[in-house]
Amino acid sequence: MAKIVADVMSHNPITVKPEMPLKEAIKILAERRISGLPVVNDQEKLVGIVSESDLMWQESGVTPPAYIMVLDSVIFLENPGRYEKEIHKALGETVGEVMSKDPLTTTEEKPLSAAARLMHERNIHRLPVLDTNGKLVGILTRGDIIRAMANE
Image (cartoon, rainbow, N blue to C red; front, side):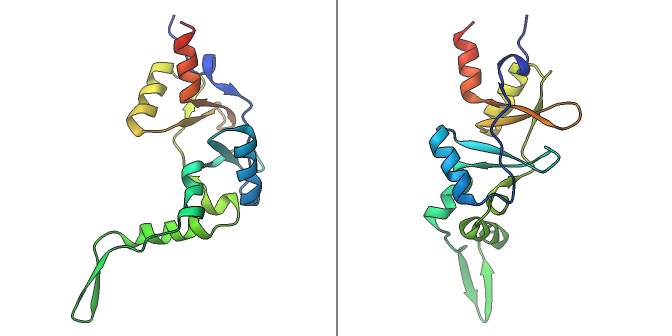
């Protein structure tokens, strides 16, 4: 019988709130040796994910977008909106300021193979798992999938 997400996901994942100071979230990630945390609001609805990638801006800083000057005009060679987003992440002090919003999600009933394919195609390390009411009930990580493969 084919496995579904609920068979291998991590139940009751550690979550954080958007208003949590970033230093507290970093401490949780380091102490628990995990690479990302679901961000939920007061109704336990998923509002984002904060991951190691989101936090790298804090340490690495931001590189301004490339541009050229033509007469008195500035022409950006890449999207300056991305630069603005990166600055926001680099200067953020709360989880909500640096988290990735609108993460891809899955449901408990989804076939594990479909969730694994989505994670592979989008190069995602974790998928929040929502129930039928949109409430966070678990998280599926690459490690969960590998462990399930090992137990077959």
